[in-house]
Structure formats: structure tokens, C-alpha cells
Length: 247
Image (tube, rainbow, N blue to C red; front, side, top):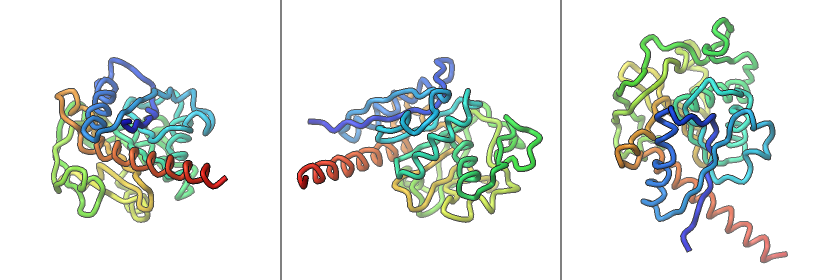
């Protein structure tokens, strides 16, 4: 029987959002390539008020479409994935909120904010980009030894964007100087993706790589995420079987 994985999509579904239309086929294409079955559930952020809402998934993907209806709900889901070792992917707004969650709960910057929500905050770790990246494609430098470089099989890529906010350069050194590290930059050295060391799979990218699925292509990063979910599910179910057998 084909192994199946369940993915929780953290975000407020809107059929008008191109990335939202692209995500289900991206998951299906990646899973089919890997010989897996896949199901997904959209998790509206205002419904995420406790860990129970995001428990039971083999992976969590914080999707584009911010500002979310509940920033607290999105951050709770990201923290759950980070602390529990659940494979996590963040794209666009998911990247932005992964950075905020890390700043608040790992670096203990309680005042870490998103400039879209709190433009006058003292510590806007996510700030307005100097040049908006709305409906544009751009080059990426994929840093050696990262999961992203392994997923693409290259040190260069071209990806699509739909965003006006990114990591604030003022806080870049502190944010990516520890377990959270830069995984990709643009040609000017601006961080465009991060990943977390010591985690099975915790990767966030400011781009929207899922859009490739609308052209019938498997997005490399989605493929790597789905593969990590499959590995995690196999290990979890194997451990459950062993525990049952020893009772």
C-alpha cells in the first residue's frame, strides 16, 4: 500500500491568490514523483488557538497571503513545528513569520514585529523592501551545504516573488548568526531564504516556488519538503509499531 502523508497548510485560503491555487498541485506533483500519497488541510489562522489544531500532521507549510487574520495563530503553528521537529516549509509570508517566531521565542526579542502590522515598532525584523518584489522573478544564490542547494542540485536558481517585505538588514547578523542561518541570497547579498540547523527540515523562502506547479513542474523545494514529511511519517509510524509490540 502506498504511504500517505498529511500536510497542514497554515494560512487563510483565498482562491484569488496565485500561490494558494498552486500549492495543492505542487504537493500532488511532488508526492507522485516520490511514490507517496498526500492529503492537505487548510488551517485558517484564527482557528489556531492551541497545539491541538496543528497536531497530527506529517508536515506544516505556512503559506503566502499575509497579513494573516491571526498572526498569533500563524506563530503558534510555526513554533509547534520548530519545537516538535515537524517538517516545516514557509514561503513568502511564511518566511517572514518564521523569522518573527524565531526572533521572539529563540532570541527572546519580545518586541520583534512585522512592519506591515506595526510600522512604528522599534524592532521590525521584517521591514519594507527597498524595491518591491511584486510579480517579478529574480536570481538566487543557494549557499553551499544547505538543504535548499541540495534540493535544487545547484548553487543558482530563478524564483518568483509576490511580496513587499523581507528580512530587515539591520537585524540580519543577529537573526542568521546562530542555528537559523541564511540559505539563499539575492545577488546583492539580501537574505531570501533561511533554514534551521538541528531540525529534520525547517526551511523558509521569501519566494513562491510553488508557482512552478502551475506549469506542470515539481518545485524542488516542495519536493524536498514532501520527502522530509515522508521520512518523518515512516519513522513515527515505525516507532509507534515498536512501542505497541513491546506492550
